[in-house]
Length: 113
Length: 111
Image 1 (cartoon, helix red, strand yellow):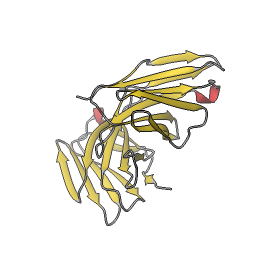
Image 2: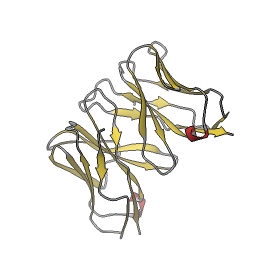
Image 3: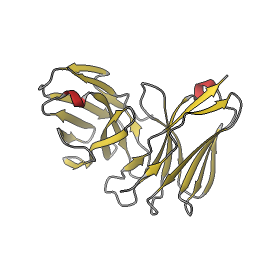
Image 4: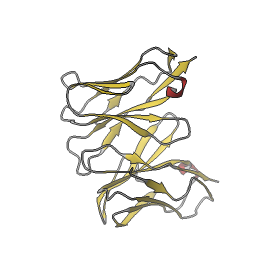
């Protein structure tokens, strides 16, 4: 059973600080990794994709991937109250006919003013 | 931007009714998916489709069926709705190798 593991939180971070969200996965052959943000009562929204080892930056967000350690992380710089949401780590299965993605259960992030 | 449209935002149905949830995407994506999301259980895959008329069971297909007669439309059918199918239902679509785009979801209540 392929798995994606995240700490459920809640993770509480002061406004303006860096929020660090972490994720591990079991499928060694996976090549595509994603972070989704989900506000309460809303559907998940794709915020970052990463496909190769290292860092990928987009505005205040940085995704980090280490395939050898099977580890993905998301850093949010200058955290804002609007960043308070649940963040889902997602990993594409390596052997799926339809490019299925496995989702973690999410980390709830709370930014305190 | 890709748009994935789910026909209803909120739906209330009676036990035993046959329920149809519709999903339409406008970007020619091959792959479409139906999930349900419940507190504490995360996203659970019900069915998916990688081509017209092709469908595969996900992790929790019992009590559900699907139809994909056209590439842009993927329907989820609850054959005989039960109270344990009360949930948020999410449709998603994708191109191969890219992330999913989700619809806004249908919150179904079965009474």
